[in-house]
Amino acid sequence: MTDTLKLNLSEDAYKGDAQFTVTIDGVSLGAAQTVTASHKAGAQQAFTFAGNWGAGPHKVAVKFLNDAYGGTSATDRNLYLMSADYDGTAYAGINAGMYSAGDTAQVSVKAPATTDTLTLNLSEDAYQGDAQFTATIDGVSLGAAQTVTASHETGAQQSFTFNGNWGAGPHNISVKFLNDAYSGTAATDRNLFLVSAKYDGKAYDNLNKGMYSTGDTAQFTVQTTTSPPPQSSPHMSLVGVNLAGPAFGAQNPSSVPGVVGTDYVYPNHGEIDYFASKGMNVFRLSFLMERLQHSQGGAFDAAELARIDDVVNYSASKGIKVILDPHNFGAAWGNDIGTSGTPASSLTTFNAKLAEHYKDTPSVIFGIMNEAHNQSATQWEPIVQDSVNAIRAAGATSQEILVPGTYWQNAKDWTNSDNATVMGKVQDPNHNMAFELHVYFDASSGGTDPAAASPTIGVERITDATKWAEATGNRLFLGEFGASQQSTSLAALSNMLTYMDQHSGAWQGGTEWAAGPWWGDDMYSIEPTGGPGNYTDKPQMGILTQHLGTG
Image (cartoon, rainbow, N blue to C red; front, side, top):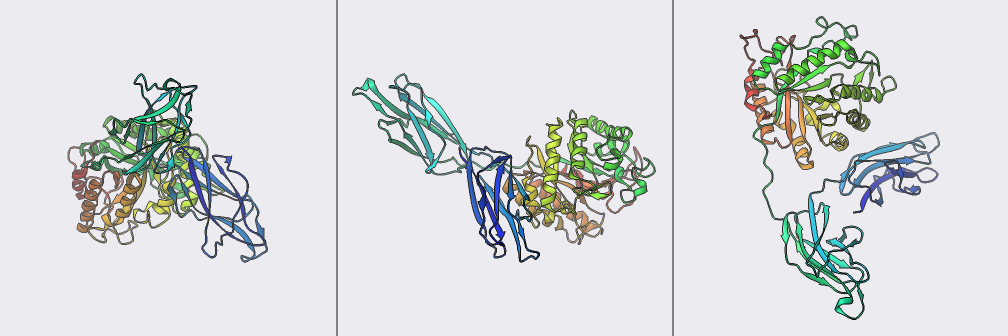
């Protein structure tokens, strides 16, 4: 089937119009194109390309060819990639500006997953060659001509299957006979027969439509049988807690890498035993990149890696998965990731090394990065995509990846910002990923006040993201949600987890913020008081245990 790529562009014209070329996965899509739509006026110009590229994902690159500049913003020729569409999937809000010759705007595209299947069963009377046909659905071609070799006289049939996104219907299916041949007798006559068909599991038997001359067409109508939508599970599948002690001291340069037990701390087996006894099945283990890898691209510190191994392995023995969370807030080695001081490749290399080490550890989930915020979604998306690709290339092909947005990963801003439209383009070649969001209940949404804004604030702040996930078929994971012991905050926690259970088709689960040996009386701590055999639960724990996952 033919694929269609549509690009919508605009320009700032100066001494002529902006020109560009396009590639898909590095292959040129033809000669230079010229844009005449004014960016200032809000106009856009559509350019359509057709090919047989397949589902993807594919990297599309638009290259600006002919910059011109006269010293002011009014005397400057620029090019803008505004939006795109690939096989019916829209990529809105790209808004990528190109200001110098050679500047390139990139977007990753893929076709929507095929959801409908049409099977046609045909036979022929062969004479001086086999019968050929083309098929259409609602007038749209289903691809190139096909050849039938099954003999109608012997009762044989040949199946031809087509996949697409056509929906319930009804749809008009048409099969056209292309190459009749006839020499005057029934034995010297080439014919084509549409015997039966099936559409999305519904059979259309005994069609028995004969086509005897070139151009003859057999037609019939199909419609999907209506079935109830899939039901969500009673609970989310993964519910647990953040173990955050290994990331302590991040704001104090003298504490990085620091001394374990003095500047930072890892959870002990007793703590893991406590949370396991409550039925939790996932931990989010926060640590600092610079403690594990002292220099960009360097080897991992063996002692630090052993501490992470200990948590991962002991947790696995209790049936608990561990999310590896580089808790660096989108920066490392003194600079934002993606800048000259700490290039994007530093994060890619770090995650590749981590994946190489844990590629044979099925209990690991890769978290990529915590709460980037200085990077725009347009800057952050290719950085995250490179880490996803690097994790898979390193051999970690079965473990899940949690994809972080930018802007602090704040759930309430997922659809209000360009996180959904831009970060939502991230693709996993192994199709095992979820988008990681965070939510806090205080008025500022920053997790700085024990008072919740209202008992329903958690639900309100995740509703739009939930609807987005359900509409797009994506999964979500709530990597951080913090509730204090204040009554309104506890009510907000309970209401939100209930809502997530009700929408467990979108929400895979989440990890409460936070626990660890040094959390003490922190307003969000769910670390128990007392010791082994004499633990006293925090109030939040009683709510969490009502929403434990099913494994």
